Amino acid sequence: MSQSRRDFLKLSTTTAVALGLGIVACKQEEKFILNTVPENDRIKVGLIGVGNRGKSILKTLEFVPEIKVIALCDTLDFQMDKGKTYLTNEVQLFDDFNKLLALDNLDAVIIATPLHEHYRIVMAALDANLHILCEKALAYSIEQCKEIKRRGDLSTKLFQVSYQYQLHPVFNAIKNIIHKGYLGTITRIEAYWDRNGNWRRKVPNSELERQINWRMYKEYSGGLMAELGSHQLNMIDNILGSHPT
Image 1 (tube, rainbow, N blue to C red):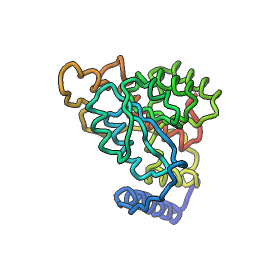
Image 2 (cartoon, rainbow, N blue to C red):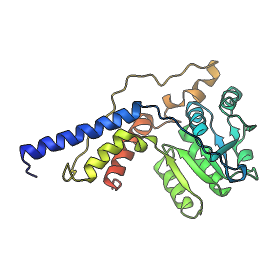
Image 3 (cartoon, one colour):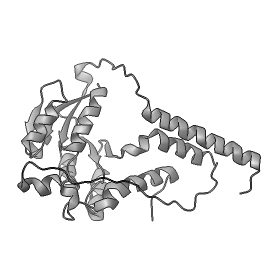
Image 4 (cartoon, rainbow, N blue to C red):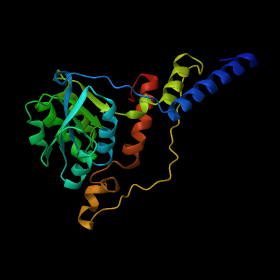
């Protein structure tokens, strides 16, 4: 695709402005005015998995009055005790996710457990006929993902895999630039993640090492490709509107 120097400068300016606006949006703290939602209209939700991701979700839901978390489930009491502090309402606590799923007044479930637990909990939630938000990656293996897809297609409820980066202002600015044709036909995308951090978390005692630091072990985690690479693949799928073959 040929373009004049004028066109190139116009494109460069457009790109810079879009990215700049995205970065500003990320740094800007918006003032939220929460709506008052009648109690009967609120969606009653249970959260399974109250680790770092689960507590982050609870904190976010403070700004979503349409949702009311009525139950928490985790095998570690101290995780649920911490999770309760994010809620202003009374909440039921469970160490067995099946008991949470059996609640009569439950509308939906959020699954934020370690990856290797996703499949059995998702399938049980589908059997319970609930709306589902499941953290990424969907499941531990391709076959598990395919089985969830087959089972999910039979449900009338909503099912969403939680990929937060596709809501990122910078990503959406880039997506807009591509969809307007400024980059022509995309034939190759290289994805990488520069990050210098440690997945290993401190544990109260050594017996909880694998349970808390599950990302460090192949039995429970898909490693960097599942934990970080899946975000990149999701964004690429979203930009191109297609999936790998």
